[in-house]
Structure formats: structure tokens, C-alpha cells
Amino acid sequence: MLTGTDTPSLYLDYGADAQRCGCGDVDLSERGMRFTSRWQFSIGTQLSVLLVHMHPRLGLCRMTLEGIVVWCEPKLAKATRAPPLPRTPG
Image (cartoon, rainbow, N blue to C red):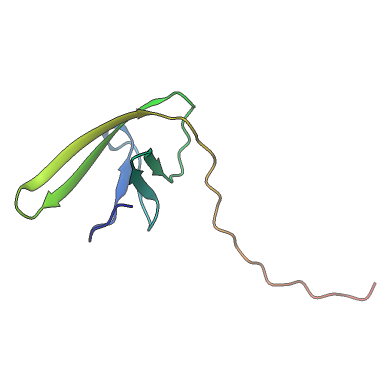
């Protein structure tokens, strides 16, 4: 899990669209990278991801990760609870 004081953000090519991430939306592990976004990518799509962070001693650091999409599913919208409807005698 990425940690830090800044909130991660995802950007499409050249800033065509952007999305701020919430807690748990980006996960890096030895198995790969998983992120949650409103965008969908076809299986087999090649992605390039640029990670940028401020290192206390080295300053601004950048690392590019490249990979291929192996799984993509729609992000479920946050559930909205509707108030219960009153029952009417029928």
C-alpha cells in the first residue's frame, strides 16, 4: 500500500483527465500494481505509470513502471441508501 502525506492522483495522457485516489485505491506489491479508477482498460492494454514523490534528502524522485492490463472490472458506484417507503394497506 502506498503511504505518505500526499493523496495519490491518477492522470491520463498529458492530463486529459485526472482522478484523486482515496485510501486503498493504489496498491503496489511483488505481484504487480492494482488501482481503482473510473476508467476501464481493455485486457492486454500496455500502461506506463509515472510515480513522483518528494524524498527528504534527494528531492523530487521519479520512477516509471510499465505493465500490461490482465484484469479490469467496472468500479461500483457508492451505494446510496434510500429511505424506506411507507407500506400502504392494499
